[in-house]
Image 1 (spheres, protein in one colour):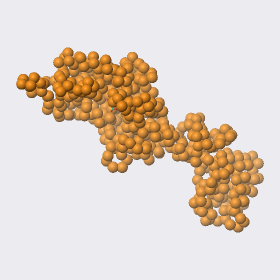
Image 2 (spheres, helix red, strand yellow; image 1 turned 90 degrees about the horizontal axis):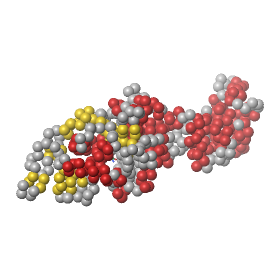
Image 3 (cartoon, rainbow, N blue to C red; image 1 turned 120 degrees about the horizontal axis):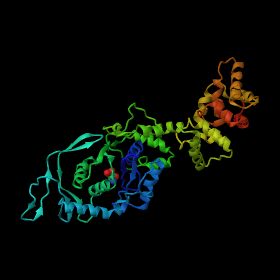
Image 4 (cartoon, rainbow, N blue to C red; image 1 turned 30 degrees about the vertical axis):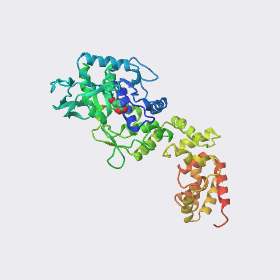
Length: 459
Ligand code: GLU
């Protein structure tokens, strides 16, 4: 077991933003890569927004993504409590250390942290008040992503507000120290806080953790930061839309991290193996929903059939597709797995396999009826298929080949579009021959007959 201890420290807001999820993922992967510990710490000091429902959205999102935490809510651990709202005694104790060391002073009811070094004047003698120090010599932060970051100016800063509430900088650092955090991996928006945090670590005599500030995520179009609100910016939107959790994970990891060889599709095992801090990029990442959809599709194709079935069957159930014959249902899903673009689309994609009253796509129909004599062709296919004895892909193939040969054609492709249309009502779908084979002889012939009966002779 390595000594690495990383944490994800969200403030629950009622939704789980993809940017936050990305931070959680980077921490989780780093812990798994190094054999370290992944801690979930809830920064719930913003009273009103921190409801049990808000926490639940977060925990559910983490579980759905598979980001299991080793210490934190529900699982506990030796460094708890894991809710900031329950750690007041610890903050008081650390604050007292700063008073004892003469590193704080009070002004206007608030407690200020004193920067080290020469002060312009320790006291304003007349007012008997501590004078705020502004330090102008540059400070350097050592960041695993950004390298040496120089920050020019720093001044004494408030660590307890006049209403008695400790400020983010204090509680964040106290938690990192008291939880033994070794690496702080978080969004670049916190880079500007990091000099303050370093000052506090030093004042407490604690070693600095390694910092890794991960790049911002920009909107897909334009220079702005990725939106905070709206459909499609939260983890729960993708759970609702039946995305594959691993599809989202694979997409999120690429928002600011690259494998050395530019590989884009990963198994979880590969990600754990390959993820490391040097692969995190400095430049901003860009949120691209099309890319997310593409990665999701690719990951669906790569799922072992059993896992695909486990995910797909409930989705079809929800869409009220009648799956009376489980063996047939599994064959259909196995056939469609590599063709469907998403689990959300799947019910529509496979509906005609299970429902005799499937609809006909007019556009596809028009296209097919423009060429040749499709009804004649269909009648020929019907006769040919009616003669197939052992109904399997090979025999069906043979029947089409014979039909083509009898008419002096090398390939039977001219008979395919109308056949597909008659049995499915659409112009595209899984490969025709295996589809006919799975549908079964009765269903195929019944559908063809019904189709031919719909059209008066000669149309
Ligand atoms: N609660 C802070 C946030 O959500 C945590 C910052 C940190 O990781 O240090 O941004």
